[in-house]
Length: 169
Image 1 (cartoon, rainbow, N blue to C red):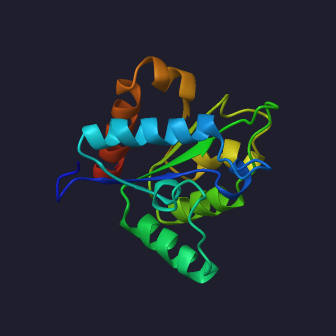
Image 2 (image 1 turned 90 degrees about the vertical axis):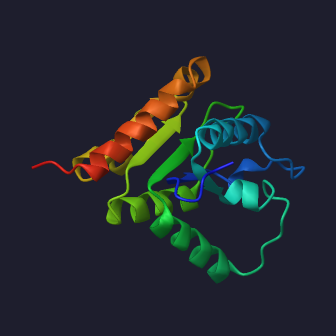
């Protein structure tokens, strides 16, 4: 559980294209989101995630504008944005237009961005994702590293917060 004045982290990643034909949400992605959220919450961060709020695609949200307003408000509120880049069972990144929009918002709002994924950055990521560090505080992190040592994620989040709190001269 988070403390009232704790820092807020938004976790983004595929939702729409993370469900298979039978409507089942990608198990690997769901497990990863819950794992990352748990690590952060145990460290007293407030975690916001559309995945969790929408019960991993089971909640039928009708109004797109309402969704955009909620997610944009979360981005304004957050201290760090984490975007998940996950591959499917065919080893291709799961498409996520919304995640890319959120990365743009985070960058424009000067939020620290952590791109957590399978083999990031790679040539499969667009030039704008790979080169984002030219204009934003961004860190690429391997899921395998975080699964080996969850403290890596906490250290990276804390470093991102310190970088924003103490601007370069």
